[in-house]
Length: 276
Image (cartoon, rainbow, N blue to C red; front, top):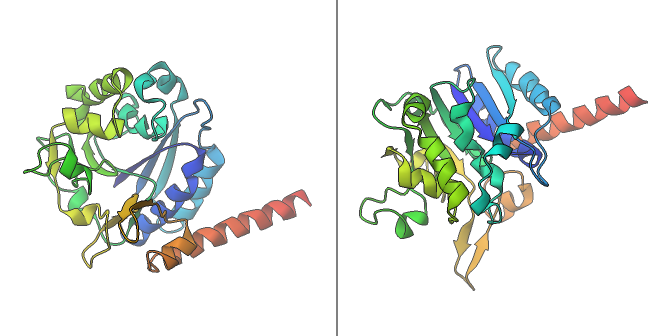
């Protein structure tokens, strides 16, 4: 099964945790593709991170593989100029370049780096995408303000099953890149995809943006709102361990968090021995 992550050096922790959660919940071989770039203050993910992740996941399945793809040159040629100053990092739009990277296969599951897997996702991954370009779950808040309020078809782009063959044929991502370059939008790449894609809505369990339910497959740690004693936005990511425990009361991912922490400690210990 093919998995796509995107981002700069700052998302390495999220990618590692998400990859560990995937490996925990499937016996299938996993091919992880990481699109990265350096632009402005953003630094591309280094190869040594990909090597570390490769070593870790191949210990779980010898057929697992990590491919790091630095597309800085391509990305900088097609900067989303109208949306460079939004609250969302420009590198969120890296997924819109997957069509021009020949290594990306025809079927791939894109995950944001704050998404953790908690159950087997093979049924979703293998679902029929013959006549569509993307499949995903409606956005928790956006479904009320964007798209068709009756259909609730404004998809959250944090978990997307993508038919790259259809996307390449239709030029979907090229059109989305053009829209992001020319028109300022809220959540630019997500808005562009929803406006232009041939899409399919899937059950909320494949991108749970609220509370975890018994059937939740992917938990997406999105920003949410609390209304008491006052309205405020709350952001808790999987690597915010204390907040994960104290604010969200989520403990079920502790094993992968501890495994990640141990791998860092071993890496630091080995580096100390090497240099001393």
